[in-house]
Amino acid sequence: MNKKRKKVATVTFEIGMLILALFWLYPYFWLVFSSIKPQSEIYTQFWPSAFTLENYQFIFSTSEKMNRDFIRALMNSLFISLTVTASVVFTSALVGYAIAKFKFLGGTILKNFTIFQMLFPGFMFTIPTFVVVKALGLLNSLAGLIVPALFGAWGVFMFTQSFRNIPNDFIEAARMEGASETRIVLSIMIPIARSTASIVGLFTFIGIWDNFLTPLILISDYDKMPLSVLLASFNHEYGSQIGALLSGAVIQTMPMVLLFLIFRKYFLEGIAVSFK
Amino acid sequence: MKSKQSSLKQMNAIKGWTLISPYIVHQAIFFGYALGWLGYLMFVKWNYLTPPKWVGFDNFVRVLTDEVFWLVLINTANFMLYFIPIALIASVFLGMAFSKLKVFKTFVVLSFLVANISSGVGYSIVFQKLLSESGPINRFLFQQFNFTIPWFSRPQLAILAIALMVSWKFIGYYGLIFLAGLNAIPQSLYEAAKLDGATKWKQFTKITLPLLNPSLVMVLVLQITLSFGIFTEPYMITGGGPMKRTYMFMMYIYENAFRKFTSTGPGFASVISILAAGISFGCIFLVRKMVEKEVNLV
Image (cartoon, rainbow over all chains, first blue to last red; front, side, top):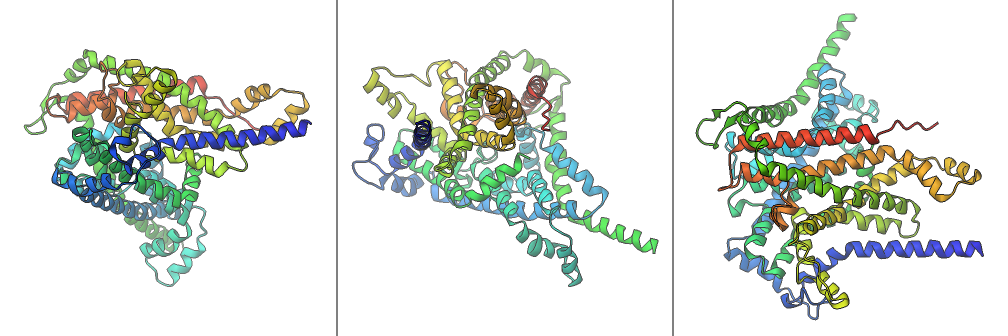
């Protein structure tokens, strides 16, 4: 009897959590459905009565004439995020390798320094970053968004932790064969620590893709804006075009969701690692 | 022999320095030099064009006597008053639910985490529409219960709405932090407690909560940092209104430093950012003092 009751409780709990999870996804369902239904139905019904791509058509062709070129913005976002991600993974691995595998004073200082850096809240750097980017003559350019992000303290920290567990034998063997240090990092260290590399890459990509405040401040031309800022400005001026606006939101959100779903294993690992 | 070893050590150091030098140069510019600017800007009046003018502590006086500064501080506290308990309690229970789930565990965890990686601008737009006067949620409430909730036109409701959205986004992530904490608690403690006849509630308050202390502190710190840095949601949805009651520190900094017409220059705004950072550190310090306990597992 008692056992049976317990079983009922377990089943109820599992199903209850499943429903709660679906409920949690409701904003996503609503967003995606809204983007493919006629604008008049967005507020009135959940299931589209008819499937339409007019909202996407609007975003991809009409908005261009309104000086809101979403395809251009998508390309800008991809370019910025991919460049920064590639750079951060590579440079963090290089610096992490130096700290983890070379015993020298600079390494020890740098290791403590990266931890110290992570104490500063990001909002303290909003104004000085603008000033420095301006001084470098990079205001209103994609480079202004890329250059300040080329290195990252968090990535260095992650790679340092992970490289520490890799035995030195691999490195010694490669050196015997005359491989350069860069070569060792690229073809030995990163492949062995590929889960760390994926985590650093993923979090960096998503962080840059989703960054809003920095490009809002640094970029003023519409054709140089990443998606986040262009979408916000579209919302500001053409907010009544709900269908188009929401399909823009789909385009901005979905790459991150897809990446998350593809790399979910590393994501969960990454979160677990950063709690230690 | 000895000199060979020391020259090897020297070689090692040279290689090391070579590898880290680009990073040091980059950090010197975008961390060190930037921080130097921040320190300098606090004491000058500047319009980004003509040479800065030294004004001493004038910016501090102006910020501290600005009514808006105190309003923003109250708004931030008001937001935390909703956000911290709601998201903290929800995520503790969510973490416990994660740990108990068997069949649907992966799906449920992923569903809550997908919320966490939603784009800031995208999800702000979605919630703005979902909660709007004629949006689906109010339509449903009106049809079923004959009332609507004017989420973004009453101050307390607007703050609550933003706190709820942010909770929607973050409790999956916080829940996972608690899950990690729960997994670190040895099952033997619960078995011993059961043998002693402890109730479920007793087990929760005497074992689970005390041993979750490190995770609790971590989530609290994340919540406080988030509250002081929140920008996209109020900027996109309320623009700081109604009656400036969702006007938060980051918007205050942004409008003073960068926005045409409202800009009073980077000096004034730098002082705000330093004060906000100081106050958030103060809150974190206070939380650690009050909540943090040494946890010993023997």
